[in-house]
Amino acid sequence: MLQDRTLRLQYGNRIEALCVLGTQLSTDVYGCVFIFPEISLDVDADRDGVVEKNNPQKATWMWGSDGQGAILLVNCDKDDPLISALDCDDEKVYSKDDLQDMSRMILRTKGPDRLPPGYEMVLYIPMSDSDKIGVFYLQNPFFGQRYIHVLGRRKLYHVVKYTGGSAELEFFVEGLRFPDDSFSGLVSVNVSLLETLAEGIPQTPIFTDTVVFRVAPWIMTPNTLAPLNVFVCSVKDNYLFLKEVKTLVSKANCNLKVCSGYMNRGDRWMQDEIEFGYIHAPHKGFPVVLDSPRNGGLKDFPIRQILGPDFGYVARESLFEIVTSLDSFGNLEVRPPVTANGKAYPLGRILIGSSFPTSAGRRMTKVVRDFLYAQQVQSPIELYSDWLTVGHVDEFVTFVPIPGKKQFRMLMLSTSACYKLFREKQKEGHGEAVMFKGYTGTDTKRVTINKVLSNEYMIQENQYVQRCVDWNRDILKKELGLTEKDIIDIPALFKIDKQGKAITFFPNMVNMIVLSRDLGVPKPFGPIIEGECCLEQHMCSLLDPLGLMCTFIDDISSYHKQLGEVHCGTNVQRKPFAFKWWDVIP
Image 1: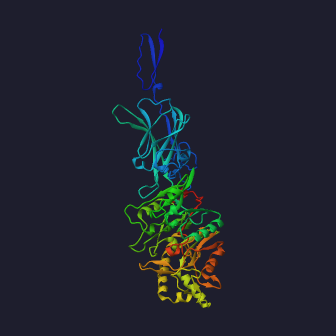
Image 2: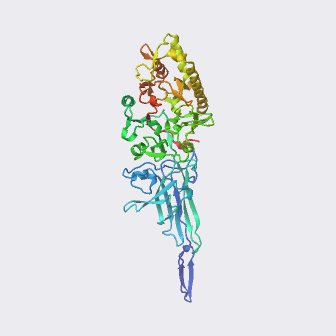
Image 3: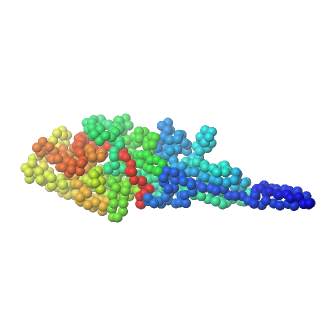
């Protein structure tokens, strides 16, 4: 009688069997076939804050409310005060706070207890992304957590330990660089199951999964957003200015941050050194300060006193171009959300000053312009500002919040409006009304309305200024979809210096600080009529009906004489937009 025997073959192992005569032998072939594990590299591709399983669109990235694709934050804050570098500049995790700045990525596997010899799973990134992304792995989560840096500048691949059965391996991904002229903002991470056919023969992938992230852009905040903190410098001659700013800030119910003398080293131009913005992802967001390349006395202030936990820092330094006044961030502003020419700009548009339309002159350095354009969500507009001595856009335009659908008005300086006002006052019999009354500056002669209106050369100077302003007015109306009803003309007068650039004749009221409905306006020291400044009266008549309250701040000695005003000497950190930037269609 024959005996039945079954020989079970095991994949990857050599099997030897002794067959005895009279024995019927059968083999279990199916038991030896290698069953490939299910592998899925997963991210928050639908942008809801949850890492879903095997989203079919995880390897692509699309803008818009119906779009998809994961988001990455540049880990540019400093969660540990004892560490000098930004969190993105090292390859370590010092706390769970650091992890919260990163995006979760989960490698899900389901399959046999172990991989056969010659097979391994590898996580990897392209060489081109190695300076833009860092990946950490949570090792031994049940026996003392340890976060291992597995991918980044010095590591392009990582062999993943296969744990068998159903498993989820958690990774944390950080951004290392913001989008720029050579970086679109997109990065990818891949996982492959590799097979070795024979010793000496390169491994071949038999399965690959890919996920794509976009690095969150740096976003500016316009005057229409609520203020949080106001920054100002304390220098030896601005005590009274500081006192008035403190009163205004208290009235607006926000916080005042004073940079003391040892930190500012005599540099009072807070607006010129830094610009506040923020970054945002579905899981988190935090403010980020952009440091200008001007590098004045305030150059250490943003790193030493602003950078910290959940407050990031980014800078752009010019290597080959000459840094000019146009690289100061009084020359970097952002307008509120608008729709123009059929296109929506829900996060507003950046405004920068330039030498345009002239062929030569000062221009913001290319490294800063490239950075601003690369963020994509606040399409910049270049205006003509080189006609000014300082050359900043905040000298001739600003925006104020109002109720209603449009939500803002644009204020532009106007020499024509000033001459019109002065002529009206002259006709009313106030030609001898004196300007600069109460200002004791030794360089101020007795200036009256009649003297201003009789100065033909000054009239020609201001006609030139008005033409420069009108050039920008036309650009802004076109690019921002504005009408004349959206624009308020603010009286101003200028003189032309020896270099042919324009300097404001009296404190420039456009250069104000906007704290919701409270406006800190440079005190113009205009003609006094019946005990009141007619310029202040006119300003209030324009803005009071809009629910805006003007506080006139005396900056003539501490700022105006040094070619700046209230806005130049202050800076405001504001609340971020509620609108999600990934819903923009660039």
